[in-house]
Length: 121
Image 1: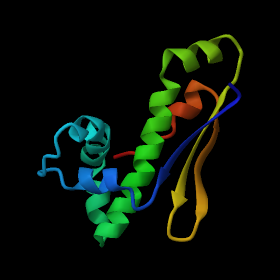
Image 2: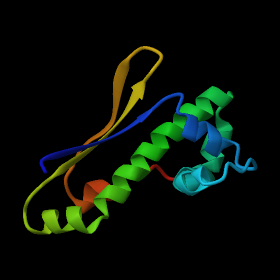
Image 3: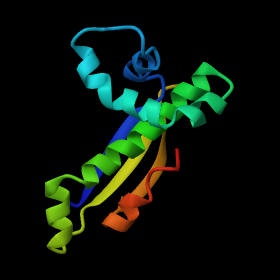
């Protein structure tokens, strides 16, 4: 494993559902738990944005960053780093509106870089 890419996409239905926290969706709520946690952690930042679309786009980005951090904390990645193998983790967002991929973070290959992924909430 040399490179691992975590990709989200703007306009994500899961993120939209997580934005509507009061609405219960059944089994899918289990999968939305992480996104809802990210939303709660960054509530102040998201509320400063002026439109629902801007908040949704930012939540997509924040979720990708959190998922890269979660991946960095897995035993598989931690063991690889401890053994000198340096899998590089990357986070990006695909924009379905224009077909472009936007890089959020590249080459996270140690704990120090992983620790710096998440902006202060």
